[in-house]
Length: 543
Ligand SMILES: NC(=O)c1ccc[n+]([C@@H]2O[C@H](COP(=O)([O-])OP(=O)(O)OC[C@H]3O[C@@H](n4cnc5c(N)ncnc54)[C@H](OP(=O)(O)O)[C@@H]3O)[C@@H](O)[C@H]2O)c1
Image (cartoon, rainbow, N blue to C red; front, side, top):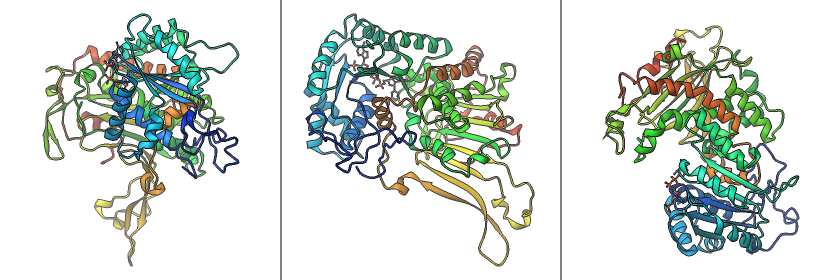
């Protein structure tokens, strides 16, 4: 890779990364990559990455493809190796073969090259183990010692929790009883780090308990709570858009913003994950983590620097500034829904209660809409509306900042068609399926009379840069190996988000909804979701 660098850290340009294929420990070492004309951005530390749960879905679909993409694009350190662990008995070669099959099946956009794969795969190892049995990591300690010598990983170990959350505590017990997590006083290396997959608890109490357990083994700066939303290009671009441009930030406040809408709409149902969804529901699955992270990025103050803690401080402040829900009038601020049977793209689909492993009388929410108030100087009086749901009519995730209308209607109804009524300017940050930005504004139609039309200026990541966009996992794994925690959730922010939503979940779980299912698959959720905005004369964007 040459040029701007796909994983260039937009926040920290002083860190460095290699920009050519890194054949890990087998590669010739460049004395000074700068001399070779290679642009340097960030350095990923030498390390061994241990994946707990390596026979699972996440490893196949996301982790190994991300690592291979990082490898072929030169972003992995030369001194790197992977150890996969799970119950299934396999040899190194069997594991490598199964990972190669998964790569070709799940990541067809990554150019496959057999030679490169062979070099990459020679640094992948597999070790079967039962994490819930004492001594389960004994062999791992020995293997990592050997690999540290063989691959030059310098004793740095990155542990990735890619297992069901019920195994987090047993794995932390195993790590605590091993010699793998020692951190010598005053030294930053060798380091242990741990990546934790969501869910980070299922309410405030369990989130605090998980943090205590993690902090019993790791220091907070060694804990990387992954939220793959934060690895998406547009999400990272929110900060660049706001703080690298002069024109937006002066408008980014209560004087000029009427309200903000954040939508996460999925057309799919629970896709065979009924048992998981029955436990979690939409609020835990989407709102507590992804949606509140988006709120904090849109609403945060400029950080004092691009250091990880400076950004994370500002995001945490936003979460702490969100007004607690008025539980006596909860319906005015929080709406839950569950889909019934309906149609998606003309195809009949079953209701949630008809899905496999879902109770026939389930009260689990598959849709949530919230009206949030951020009680601070910048946002007083500006509602942030957040909605997320399954089996909605379109697959789209976006943030729409609705600006206030022009103060005086110079161009009144005589200048516009009824269908083109002049509304507010809206800045939309599109997160998926297409990543990009669009700005909606009024313009004059060509002609001898003054007729106005509503148009948008669009920027699309895919077409604008013409490069493959790295997946969120590529970005985040690379950041973790480089020790950059900016895009990971910090303990206090996770707890602040649970403090906000746990009381709502408790109330919902103590009072059965009267009208579930309350929206048909293929619609935009229950009518109550519209009422949430009606008090302020707002309406959801028609997507
Ligand atoms: N899948 C995704 O796309 C995705 C996306 C976001 C987050 N996540 C999160 O990532 C984590 C992993 O998800 P997943 O979908 O990969 O789970 P999964 O497919 O159920 O895989 C679980 C893994 O854990 C291993 N395992 C289970 N019990 C074990 C034990 N007692 N000892 C040793 N190994 C054990 C399994 O090994 P065997 O197969 O050998 O029994 C398997 O490798 C979860 O926390 C999930 O919430 C997943």
